[in-house]
Structure formats: C-alpha cells, structure tokens
Length: 308
Image (tube, rainbow, N blue to C red; front, side, top):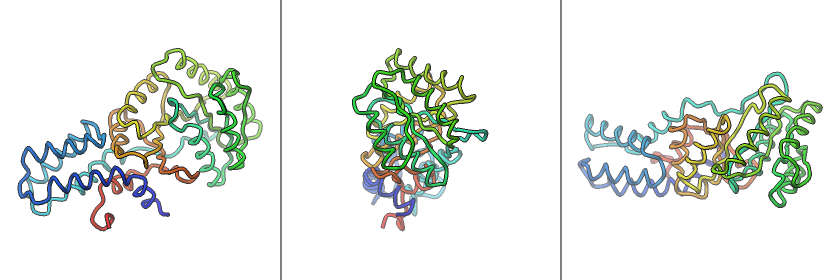
C-alpha cells in the first residue's frame, strides 16, 4: 500500500464527514452568503480544525469567491492548499545526534500508545539499516515492562528494563549506559503515562530528562509527545502543559484512523508550532508513517480523481 493510500484509508472517517458536509453546503448554491460560510466554519470546527485554521480556510474561500465568482469554485482545493501551506514548513524527520547515540523520549498521558509507538519507531529506524534499543521506563503500570519485551522479541530489538517500582530515571540511566556501550544509533525511552495536571508526575519526568542529560550531552535529543487523535481538541491542553514542563521537539498522533476529528493535527501544529513528525494509521508496525503535509492535506480534501 502506497503512502497516499495509507493516509487516505487512515483519514477516511474525517474525510468522509468533511466531503459530505461541504458538498451539502455548496451544491446547488450559486451564491456564497454568510449562511454558507457559517456552515463551512461549523463543519471545520466539528472536525477539530480549531478557530485559527477554520478562519484561514473560510477567508480563503471567501476571497476566491469574490475574485472569480461561484462558477468552478473549488472549496476542497482551496482548503487543501491552506492546510498544506500551514503544515508545509515543518521538519518531520527524527533529530539525529551525529556524534553517537540519539536518545528519544516518548511522553504523554495514559493510553495514547507510547509503548507501541516506541516499538514502531524502533522498527522504522531498523528498516533503514540503523540499530535501535528500547528502554522500559514505565515501572508502575501493570504489564508495561512485559509489553515492551514482547515488542522487542517481535521486532528483534534490544530492551533494557528494571523491576516494577524501580526509579524510572535509574532505568533510563542504565539504558543510556547500555546504548553507549553497544553503540546503537537510537535509544527509545518509553516513559510512564502521566496526567499533565499532576505536578509531581511532571517533576518526575523532568528528573528523568536531567539524569540522562548529565550522562549524555544533549539527551534527550528528541522529546516526542504522543497524542491520541480520538480525544480531539482535548489533546491541545495536553500539548500545552507538557510543552511547559519539558522541551517538546515534536508530536506523534496515534489512532487517527479511529476518529472523524483529524483536523486536530492541523490545529495543534498551528497553535503551538510543534512539528507533527509521525502519524499512526493502524495497528501494524509499519502503520506509523512519517508525516507528509501534502499527502495529509490531499487525503483530507481530495480532488475528484483521488475521491474516486
């Protein structure tokens, strides 16, 4: 399955809702009045594009109508162009420590898919001929360590772990030591899920980052916040609060195939300026894809050729 087909399939719920709503609004209406613009705004907000991106798209549609009229007005094309332009300048590749091990910390609230994402990232870099290691630093959730180990066996990835109840920072320290000794290219740290509103848990995460930073200069070189797309705009608050506590370098959006609110990807990137680096489009190891703004925009707002 090609990259566009993966995006198209993963975004089917969002795209289908938008397509039918926009078609309903503009089909048979020779004029673009305030009522149509309000309905367009409503459809975009319902898909969680947020006010900033919604206003940008509706303004562009209005400008195009005023300059060319309603004949041949391509609302999908205009929306696609605005989304791609908004997302187009982002750097979506993993950061790389050119002098040795690259440490990637996966953070987020419970249930977003951090463990699965860390394993899929390890699989991705190995598919490129690089080496990877996983650190099981969630020492509190039942079966969390076993889950990482199962992924390690499945993907042939080395796993460093400790005992349940152990200090996560200590496990991370041991993982960095092992990664340096074995000269792996990437170390992916699976941290415990934590509510962004729990101050003590955020302090614990900061401690983990300080420990590995003292051990290896610049670590973590990448801190990725894993967000569940099905939570819609609630993910915005998570992103804001995590970004205040740790220096986020990018976002991973999972479960995008299970929601009709895929616009939240655009809304969060637009407000916070954090690059969307990867997007989860399914359950298989290769369903975590490098985020491609053009393909994402096209999957959301297809032309007639792509729709068919």
